[in-house]
Each structure stands twice: as C-alpha cells, then as structure tokens.
Amino acid sequence: MPHDQPPTLPIPDALSAAHCEQVTAFIRRQIETSGGSISFAEFMQHALYAPGLGYYAAGSTKFGAAGDFVTAPEVSNVFGHVVARQCAEVLEQVGDGAVLEIGAGSGKLAADVLARLGTLDSLPVAYRILEVSADLRERQETYLEQHLPELVHLVSWIDSPPIGHRGVILANEVLDALPVERFRRRGSGIVQQRVGATPDGFAFTESPAPDLLESAVLQLEADLGETLLDGYASEICLAVPDWIAQLGAGLDEGIAFLFDYGVSRSEYYAAERSDGWLRCHFRHHAHNDPLVLPGIQDLTAWVDFTRVATAAVTVGFDVVGYTAQAQFLMSGGLEAEMSGFDALTLEAQLELSQQIKTLTLPGEMGEHFKCMALRKGNCRTPSAFTLADRTHTL
Ligand SMILES: C[S@@+](CC[C@H](N)C(=O)[O-])C[C@H]1O[C@@H](n2cnc3c(N)ncnc32)[C@H](O)[C@@H]1O
Image (cartoon, rainbow, N blue to C red; front, side, top):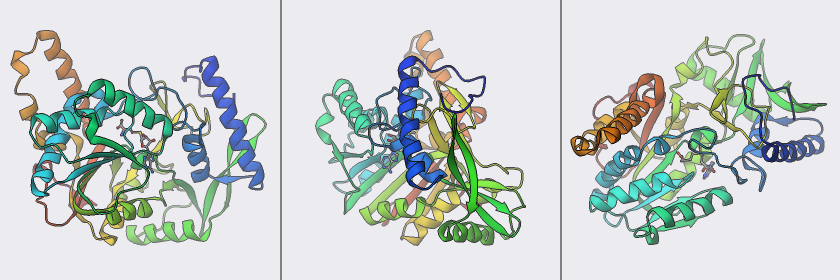
C-alpha cells in the first residue's frame, strides 16, 4: 500500500488494494518519464481519470451508502425534483429546449429530473449526458433503463458539448472534480507543489511555479488586493476558464445550473485557510491526504466561485444567481414537493424529513453547497434565486 494511511481510514479489501497498486504503478511510471515529479494537477488527473484505472474511470461503486460519498441526488429524489422545477421554468421560455447534464454519476439526477419534468408536462426534446467516464456512462444507461424505461428514449450520451444547445445545463459536483494545481507562496516567489515517488508511495516536492501558474496566482493576489502570507499554500483550478468557455460556446440560450461545495474568492484565500481546500473520500471517511489510496479514493477541491463567475462573464454569460443549496431548494419548489407529505406513512415521513435535513441544514449540505446560475439570452432569473441571492459576495 502506498504511503502510510491515516489510522482512521478503513483498510481496503483485497480487490481494491490490488487496484490501488496498479494505479500506483501507473502514476510512478508517469513520474519516472517526467523526470522525477509531476504537477499535482497531473497526479489528480491520473488518480481520477487514467483510462481504465482512475477512480472515475474504473468500476468501483462510488456513490451512495455502498460507495465512498453521497451527493445530493443520492440523498433524496427531492433534490432532482426541485431541480426539475427550475428546469421547467427555463424550458417554458425556450421553445423546444433540451437538457444537458455534465458528469451524471450514477444517473440518479437524470432519472429524477426527467421523471418530475414528465409529471409537470415540461419534458425537454432531449436529455443529453456528457460523461468522461466510460464506466459511469454504462452504469447510467443501465440505471435509466431500469428506473425510467418510459422516458429513457429521450436520453443520449455525447462526447463533447453540443453546439447550439438551447435550454438547461446541469452539473452537480463536477467542478470540484476538475484537477487543481497546488501552490505555495515562498517569500517573493510562487512555488508549484509537485508529486514525486518515495519508496512506499508519493510525497510532495516543490519547484518554481511555471509561468501559467505563477501569473494565475499573481492575478488572484491582485484581485484580492493583497499578497498571500509567506508559506501560505492553496489550490487553483486552471481548468475552470476552458471548462466554462466550452459551456459558453455550446449554449445559445438558456441557463446553466452549477452545484458544488464552494465559496467566494475572499473566503477561499482567507488567511486562516492556509493549506487549501482539498478533500478526499474513502468509504464515507473524509480526510485531507490526497496522496494515499490513488485510484480508490475520491479527490476533490472546493470551488472558488468567483473564479467560475469571472470566467463565465468573460465568455458572455450573465451570472444571474449564486445561493446556498438550502435557499435554492426552499425558493425553488421544496414546498410544492412536500405537498403530499401528510398522506405518507409515519415511517416515510420520518425518512423524508431526514433527507430534507441532510439537504438543507447548515452543518450538512445546506450551506457549504452552492448553486450558481449562468445565463445566455433573455430567460428570467430562476425562482430558486429569489430568496437569498449572494452574487454580490463574489
Ligand atoms: C463527484 S461525481 C458527481 C456525479 C453526479 N453529478 C452526482 O451528483 O451524483 C463527478 C462526475 O463528473 C464526471 N466528470 C468529471 N470531469 C468531467 C468532465 N470534464 N466532463 C464531463 N464529466 C466529468 C465524473 O466522471 C463523475 O461522473
């Protein structure tokens, strides 16, 4: 097993351990051919997406109770049903509109959104899924065939964002899965944290930051109006501008709803947050060591939503909303979704109450998770942002 594991992590079963060793060997070869180290972004890219090997590219169960972490659609179908109500508002204004979901995980959000759009009589002309993982794509197909046979004909999988898309774009917990760079301010300079091999695993090393990383960090310091303290380390996702530009180029008219855990830039690079926002998940244990368990643990970094908004404005989007998940749900149709509550059995009422708490309480998913809405064209601001929009905090 590479690296000593923090003692609280569960021991991987034999199959997972063998897979981890394969991924470790693969990354070691990349490090060797790169002359002794790779950037952290490259490490994250390999650990998550190396074809047939990476965490998202290989076959383990990731989502839900049997996996490593739980996302909002996996907590409750109420999440997808409220999202569907927001989609319906957009689709009503954009004739013959479609939905594009990016990074659809197990396929559960797609199933819940389509099911509710069906009952609202607001079905899109198509529900397209853009998914980088061949394995997850197969799982999504199976899930939708089993859970939504009557509407699965609307769903198709695409390999790059469609051109001329009109309607809705959805992405839940995709931005946090884009590889990030790690950097540290050292005196008057910026260094890049890289990953090298050790006899029993991987370790961080430091090199002068390449030009692209250095200028990005200097730019964010200029935006913050201050120089980060000596020794301060954090992450920056250099992939965000291109990712957003692809969405912008693909969407002609409509709204992109981006859900993720994240904060504004001033919170992201606050002095007290001096070691960044990486988070790793293995069998429902969250921890901060990204170099252990490559290929069998999830690696994520919280999102700097100011960076997302800036990139969006640059490519012609209007940022029409930014709010916490709790407010999104409460303004976006949660009450309507609860209208049948009294008719449920006591057991079902308790279960649903627990799900709503998980989705909305500040200590659970209600506050850390945000939704940002990006618009092309003239659609009205979705109702989910009417209660407490925080765009002014970005
Ligand atoms: C954390 S999972 C979230 C899955 C799902 N949206 C959910 O909420 O349960 C991240 C998903 O995004 C996909 N993904 C990551 N980067 C992507 C990209 N650049 N384009 C499309 N999908 C991507 C992953 O394969 C995975 O399905």
